[in-house]
Length: 96
Image 1 (cartoon, rainbow, N blue to C red):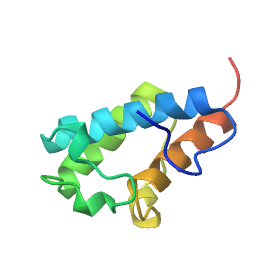
Image 2 (tube, helix red, strand yellow):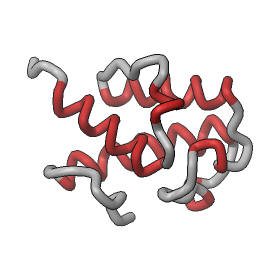
Image 3 (cartoon, rainbow, N blue to C red):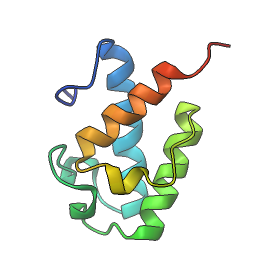
Image 4 (cartoon, helix red, strand yellow):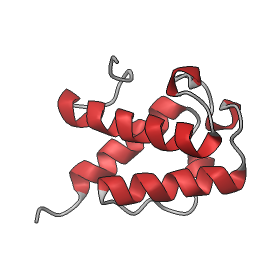
């Protein structure tokens, strides 16, 4: 699986975030991860609804050890941008 365009400086960490995000979105939407386009808006994921999106975000938070702001979905236009923001939050968290 190739990294999402523009994810960041540490490709291995970004690839991990990409995998986590795709798995969470696919699991909660009930689709195969291959059906999720990185350049598509989150709302274009087949089977995604607000409740399933929130469950997927919670799963991403738990897996990445970050807290995603409540308005995160409204600020994120595409799956790749969502991955980028999660990767940035992960890099910004305190070490420990």
